Length: 551
Image (cartoon, rainbow, N blue to C red):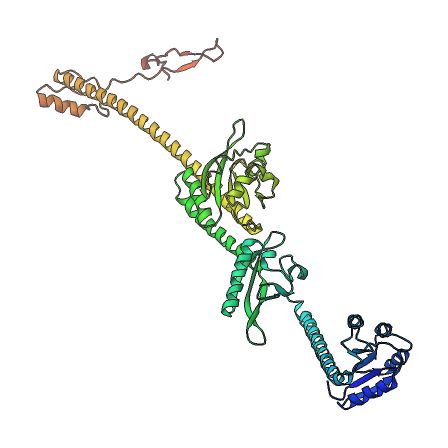
């Protein structure tokens, strides 16, 4: 405060007031004097002062009453109390009312007056500077908040004990009041708190900035992702007295990346599925390879295929599985009947012929019979896809489990449904191929049997032809007419003549086969209505000489 500071002296003793003024003016102060409480109130209504030297006992008011009236009117300046006796109780009372110091009216009063006034004025000056600084800081902080409140970024400041001293845009369902004055171990799960504390200790010890990308569990239990950095905060002497954190919530970006990654895996699995179907030689091999493909290429936790049995319990029999199964299917006892164990995703998919999803196994009522076993194996979500035959009947289901709560969005469900359809077509093609192979095998067996009968029949025919040829040869040797004419496998006339000449027998003219009598003409029997036939009588033609001679 400048040396020409103003002092208001409130003193009813004119001599003391004059001495106070003279002493203070020697230090370059300006002074005004009033002799009563009401005069003080009136003076302060129109003017201001840097410091008020107030006598405790005034003719009209005591100091506490005057201070209370000035405070209510909003015109109370910084003040020092001067009392006529050294009662500490009075001093304590006035200090509680806001007095910055007090003076006792004794022999050392005027010696101590300049020092007390000077010290008090410096304190007032510091208070004014602090108030101005705080006001400037408040305005700066307000401007900063106005600028950053529309930003999604999260700002924080922590001291060396890692307690939050400033928070802007708090995340994870927390408020500013929830975080101020607390540490990470008081706000987050133990695993998250340990990870964050280790990184922050590293910043405080090394003074180096640390950039991180970290998942954290929110107040509602959901996992959110943050990307940002911790930087050391240094005090006036350059010593690290805390840290500043700047983070951005990247949960949506991470989920989009995860969705894209899952869809790419599903597309790759679908393309590989066609190759597996084209190369598989049996149904069991195909189902097992598809389950393995979903684990290795799709990145799922477990996959299995169940066949719908038509027994009394309508049970579902696992025929192939891959991934972390660990005995889950042995105790599952899944059915597709309309019972408690048939209302799960697999049983419902087989019964209805539509895909069924359990988006959260921990809360899904349909998964109640298998919840404990599923959670022990880190199954978070599941989907069951029906396997449909050509006649629209469901013969089984492909069930897939994931350890991610964000799995099986609309696009991924469509891809997996197509994969299940391709799997059904592949199994159907294998069945058709097996039936064709069985039919071809039966046909080969029939052909082989017919070939055997043909061989037997052809052998008999050949033997008969040989016997006929031998008979003809014997007859030819005997000079008798051959019995069997020229046919396939029989000796003809020329062959017979050659045989006779070769063996020295006389040649016999070949009479050939005896002529066959033509069939007699037949006509309908009149008595039987034309439904029976009998030979017609033979009429011989008239002889030429018996015909009448015409002239």
